[in-house]
Image 1 (tube, rainbow, N blue to C red):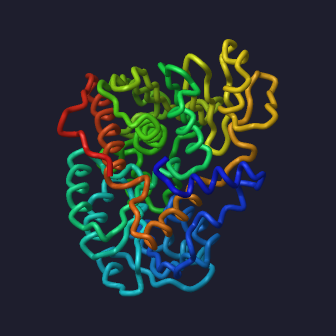
Image 2: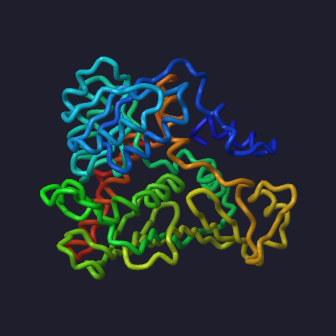
Length: 402
């Protein structure tokens, strides 16, 4: 596996320790990292809560948002000190008390601010999806690679979860056999709308609903699962098909509230990936299934079950190898847990990795190249969705692994 910490992680699991006791993975504690947060909406505030869990590694020294009430709310969440506040990210980047910047702004601003952060010689944690379109993704790769001393990590946090690392390992060891189908959903039964204290702020607060600012359901939700498939199989889709519409909430939004995307992969693994999301039903919620000739993996964000095919049950040694269990415990549906305990929020693992990569000058698993690959997939999917025609991977999108 690429990540050295996964070796430590699996050793801890084998030793019977709880997943929660994993601060050892974060590095040697070689100094507190001074962090700035640009974008203090729901995601930015969620990241502040995660950073608060590691005061020995991080101190939030600056906050930036264009809305005063968000700055006020975010500042109250900072536990160890009172950060400086800014409404203009350019002024924040002049603040010398900042080592690294977290960018959690609307998608259309990702590229602009990421470029400014890199040119200001700061390390960067850039939320997913990395960029609004594929042209920006390719340009950001060039810029980041011209500045090798800086860390750029992208917020596809499944790449840091012990659970998803274990699944990647199971795929690499062919425990699932020949994989042909991937089924993913991320559903909700709500309009995705945020309260707007002033009607003039509608497009700023509900930016996800407008094409000018947002990649919609594909960028905001499906991108996590798309990215994991890219990573786990070292692949990308060759053909992209999509359909959808504004089928539920006729409220002036522009991005679809119901979408389905199908990817055709024809590399080492010939597979079909189905990725869907709706705002009109929450029964499935988060669903992620990987289906092979030897078994199926069913994943939540923090736990997973392996369901072997009947022919695999005759080979107990292989089943033991899949689960890593000394005693297999089957649930009533014939599955067994992939890890003995649920994992933490993936953002917690991601920020521990961000800290370690800065200290050791090591490339993150979710980096500018992998982030670009997923941003390209999202752009191709959205183009297929809104233009109502298939899109295809091109040779110029092939980026060497970082």
